[in-house]
Amino acid sequence: MAKSKKRVPFYKRHKKLLWITGSILAVIIIVMTLFKVTPWPGALLIRTVFDLDSAKSKQALEKHTPQQPVTRLANEKYDSTGMLLDVYFPSNIGNTDKQLPVVIWTHGGAWISGGKDDWATYFKILAAKGFTVIAPNYTLAPEKTYPTPLKQLNEAYDFLDKNQGRFHADMNKVFLAGDSAGAQISSQMAAIVTNPFYAAEVGIEPTLKPSQLKGVILFCGIYKMFGLTQPAPELPKIIGWGDDTALWAYSGTKDYSDPIIRQMSPYYHVTSQFPPTFISGGNNDPLTNDQSKPFAKELSDKHVPVTTSFFADDHQPKLPHEYQFNLDTEDGEEAMSKVVDFIKARTQ
Image (tube, rainbow, N blue to C red; front, side, top):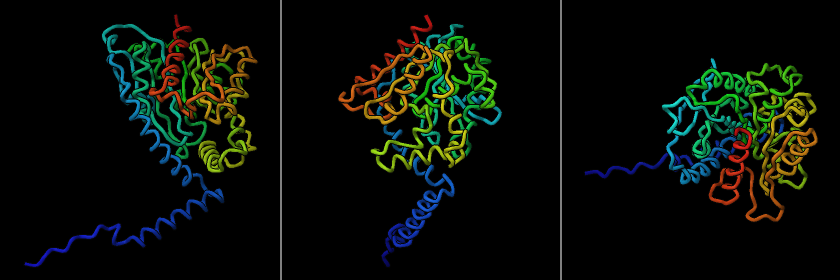
């Protein structure tokens, strides 16, 4: 009886072909990026790296799932294009008409990655503290460019207002929150809501009234886009390339003298009517000194109440970008406590 031949896996039979194909693809990505033909290859590469990194962080968060039951209403369609959001609130109020302060948390990911499910455990923890937490999706770049996410979130706010009873949401006690690019988007939306001249410039009629906004919660954000187009010279070149690619993908322009870059920067459009703000960043995150601290000062100079949570340069452990999602550290736990205190102080 003849012995059957063992099948050699495809990748072993065609190692050379795969190597050549991979090399060609790598060259194409590099050439297209270097010559600024399109942001797509670089954006997709960054998205892949970010998604892998967030997967590890999500897994680490799961051990902190609160014991108190939290209801999650998943995949609520909030606009005509099918964009989705999730709603979290303590399960023990499910059969009551009680309404809770609302935290609308816009996710980060350099505008080109991430989604509402990334920090689901974090949102459960926050909701268990006595809040309704909203996690909306928005269309990522470069699939859609600025200001598409702003228009989508404006529709999400209107959807929440119309469904506040079902979501146990007190829409007169709203906090716009976000991390990284989500902090940029949320702070820009707060500026649009509280600055009618700016709203007209962006072309958005806010569905939220200034009186509904009780605060803004910002972690590790970007508030002055020129800080990304001109990164600190001591940073690794790969960071500058990543910032350049992400901003090009989101803004839709590779001409950073374009007025749209300034328009995207909430730093230049806040007024004294901007809501009270909690702002934080890690001491090992370049955005803290370049973005968060200057934005906090700009708000303070305009007499906006600002609560900051920054760290000394020699603070240990060094706290990276998005440090607040690491609840294995005392600093992550403290950041959560400070957010809860900030909300309660403005809703009681």
